[in-house]
Image (cartoon, rainbow, N blue to C red; front, side, top):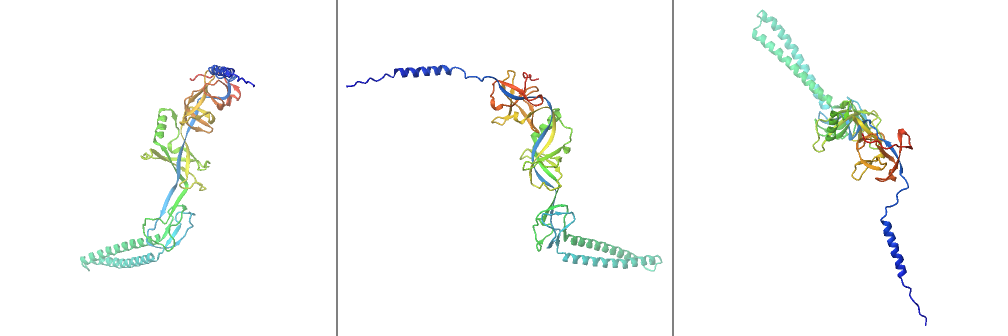
Length: 396
């Protein structure tokens, strides 16, 4: 009979216990540090002047709008324009049946001729009586009656002339003309339709689109802040409100080729939105801007002399949307810093608070660092990329 002996697990337990003790000892030690500081590209902040460009939403609206409504009642005989075409002021657009108005005009003309003939007869009689009354050939009563008849005949002529003028105007209104020059939309009536004088619905609409208005909205709080900063001297403004140049960004992101001017701003605040409407005027010779288009307008509303321009790559935003940069502090460590932005200028952010002149702001290598890590700054920009930066300058 063969007897087998089982090996005791004690040696294996001892090995595992030793391994756990070593791991516990090593866990108390700090993680290994990098072999050296991380190389990053920085720009040195400096104070300079920068315009504050405000970007506002807006919509285009016609310069002039005229709705065509008939001023006489009748049937539409002809439509004398092409829908969507350009029409000129005074151009006939609709012809209303003029038959009844022509007859009324002819009748008024006949009444005027009758009144004028009667006036001639009564004038001659009055003149004769005036001579005869001097020699007492007629009574003074007869002379007075002749004078009164003359004045009555003159009044009849004046009334007849007013009547013929009224019928002439009505006859002229049978030709419905364009009150302004511009683009005409679709016709809401066709030949044969009955229209009435001063009806509520328009027959068509003419819009003048060159120039064209752009109505912008800006919060009253922003406007008051700008005016306060200008009054305090923080911002400077050498341009009156209605002289401000305005540029447009279209819906597809392209910039409109023509520069406009700010025409005026409303004197009251919309109680529903808390905003003020500003109106800009733009030339529109090619009809590129159409009424109702959504656009964004950029206008310079002030000039700051205490701005710092930083590349877009230097500024990031935290989860709450607050802007921040990463500086190189006096110990050559990466240090996040919140900043205040006031728009952009080209490829740069306009920074008005949070950093000072001489601060070194990291632009390149941000993905390789974290707060507190040692860095080796390399100055970029005008001082030359790759140049080793000196120790950070203290904020003034």
